[in-house]
Image 1 (cartoon, one colour):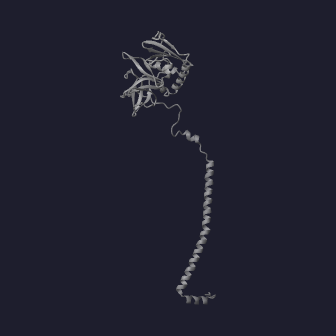
Image 2: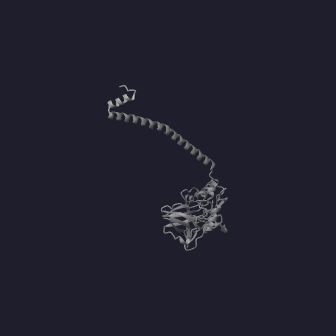
Image 3: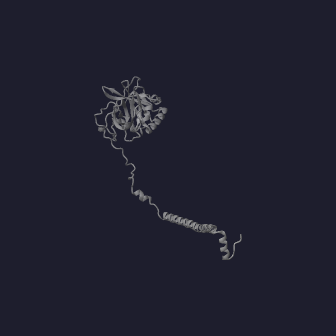
Length: 316
């Protein structure tokens, strides 16, 4: 089919085709034209918008970075606000416990001995439960119970059971008496009693020339300085009474009996003095333990079957 070149021919052609066919043809041409125009508009507008958007983002990013570079955070000023309180090293103190508000424990425990100190790392207590004696430091759980050692005083310890504080008295001391705090004042030494001959014919057991014992004693002192609770590995201690009053502390070998035997101690010896301090008086007993850190020698006075025996050990 050949399209005519003049309007008369076109009119004649439209007449031949009919109005319906002409309308359809015009509609198709319009749709094609509209699609072309839409495509042109899309490809001319979208890339430019994306470019403009990217440029805007990059520009904003540069501005943000520039602002960050120009704006430095002063940490010192924030810290000076003390938003969470002011930290002061050494200012944290354990609240003082009102002893009159701490009832005596109902647990079947025996406090056989203690090392009272205001330093928690040094304080320790020898506690017996169901015939078994152990040495505990602050925070340790007492075997066979749910209680832990909270504080060590001169004549008692404070334990915590199920969140409740309770008092365990040193065997032989009265709960009704005021609690004896840790004394920092040096306790006076007692005069050394005269040592008479014992059943072995001598009142003095001098072990200062025993080099092996000296080395063992030095190692033991270092070990106990780090962990006083380990004294129970070497010695079992229990109060010795006469007419209801404590007259000393009975000594027996612990789980590691070598030191006990090397020192010349015998099971059943009753310790009454160490380096001139009365072990029966809590203040002096504490002072004796404190001096062990720097002492050159140990002088332990024991009652052995009614006779006093002095055992001398070198720590140098």
